[in-house]
Amino acid sequence: MKLRGNWNYPTAIRFGAGRIRELPEACLTLNIRRPLIVTDAALAKLPMITEALRVFDESGLKADVFCDIQANPIEENVRRGVATYKHGSHDGVIAFGGGSALDVGKSVALMVGQTRPLFDFEDREDWFTRVEVKGMAAVIAVPTTAGTGSEVGRAAVITDVSDHTKKIIFHPRMMPSIVIEDPELTVGLPANVTAATGMDALSHCLEAYCAPFFHPLADGIAVEGMRLIKEWLPVAVRDGRNLDARSHMLIASSMGATAFQKGLGAMHSLSHPCGANLNTHHGLTNAVVMPYVLTWNRKAIDEKLGRLAAYLGLKNASFDGVLEWVLELRRTIGIPNTLADLGVRAEHAAAFAPQAFADPSTGGNPLPVDTKQFERLYLNCIRGELANAA
Ligand SMILES: [Fe+2]
Image (cartoon, rainbow, N blue to C red; front, side, top):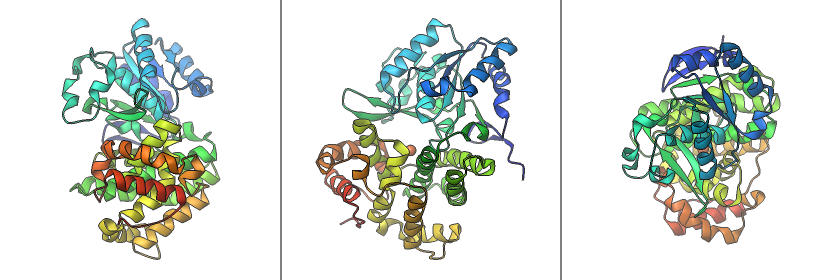
């Protein structure tokens, strides 16, 4: 089957190998003539960016690169991007890279038209109504990892250094107008990054599927996303050049983020404080906490995971079958077993628990979790203890 498509769900996606060449034409479609490419410093040196600049030159479009961003990006990255955008009189953003670059690019496009500070647009109550929509710049997203799914998301995660929390910046129009998904861009990803980002996609599908809300569209996307990940993530980790595996993982990543419009859960609540305070990798942290959160939530998701197990074709079509599969997948692709392996210590549990409780993902967890229970969950993840909620 030729893995190529043009989809308008949840936004305009151009999927297929080699489609990065359509980038200048995509800019013209959105009336962008001076795009600012927002990416990270490592990518900025790679041929995929230098080549994109050359193609822009040939097309008569004047593109510049902004790459002063960090993993687990902070507000200062966004501020500098906005200054660069204004200084260069740009008229649109190309968010090009992994989750950090995509989130900064989307935030820059939001903030070029605002007078309020970034964290006034945190995903709380109706704060998104504060946005002056007219000032927002158009965004084209080009993902180079398969996990975050931020290319089809309406939010960006930016760390607030004043209180070491990850804040979710949200506006429905932050969804990029055009997404170019070219699996060839992900071929060079090392196995460990492929594994960690792929597990982020799995955590999105799994948490969305388990979130206790009525949203059959999201559930349907999530289960097929998980089937693709089950089939293709181990292949992509083992053989990074396998374009079928890369293609399916890139699709699964977008499916995860599409599904999690429904909600996330305690995996993300636990993961965000680790990333904000200790700079752990987001997908890797989710992968580590995954079996502990599933086990904790067992009584609320027992039946649902039985259905999932049947769809995934697991021999043991039950909650335990899914748990065994997750543990086996983690071993196969080299994910560590505990948060202690990522440098999280028992003394962090009490400090991180209130931040986890306050995380917007907490509302989507199948069982309510209070601060004390988050502390318990952290300790489970640090010590490697699979335990049900008390
Ligand atoms: Fe995530």
